[in-house]
Image 1 (cartoon, helix red, strand yellow):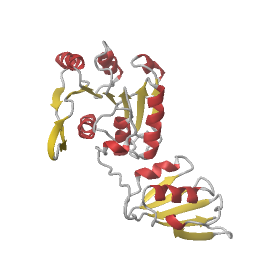
Image 2 (image 1 turned 180 degrees about the vertical axis):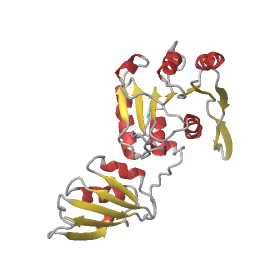
Image 3 (image 1 turned 120 degrees about the vertical axis):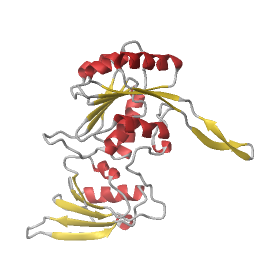
Image 4 (image 1 turned 45 degrees about the vertical axis):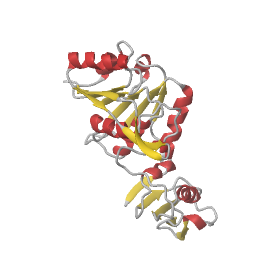
Length: 291
């Protein structure tokens, strides 16, 4: 059972929790929430899901509405209502696994996308922990920040504080893409900051526990500025595909220790009437923790 409030969070957060057999209990924002939830379930291929609306619980006006998402035709509910959903997959559900490494096709992008296999390895290197915040520098389509939030969406530190992610991207069009991807994948709470790194760092008030550099590793001084922003124990992970960026990572490792690995991925594809493996660009990855 997953409990949530559509009063304090966007309804699209349900996208993170819609799975076959899942049971969701949602405090609705208003009387339109049940119909909006039904539409969201249908879009995900969960039209057979059972929906129960409980209006004015505990009062003389208490009422119960029931139905399936795909045939939901009840009039607008009372503004004070609680929504119970039993998720049932249709014949072609759009399943979103919670483990890192979502299919590339789920991310709208213009080519600036950390590929699935590298993305899974990157999240593992970043090692998300309860209540921590990530800065995704040069976020592109936002895939790393999004998968970080999907890994730790509701965890809290003992002293408070939710897991968060800041996607830093200088291109306005990509910033809009990040927001759309985050909503579609159930983490609309992502914070998108438009601006060039490291100049924009001063405007961000959420201190990072981990930083990922996916674009711009070849820029002079960027890795050092990211390192300076990290607290003791903070992690820095950076990916590079160009020789120049790879040289920066090697130099940085020599001065700050850490691990340097090469990730090579090949995917099967047609070669005439046969099948062959085509290599993706190799990625050099640095991962280090600040003393």
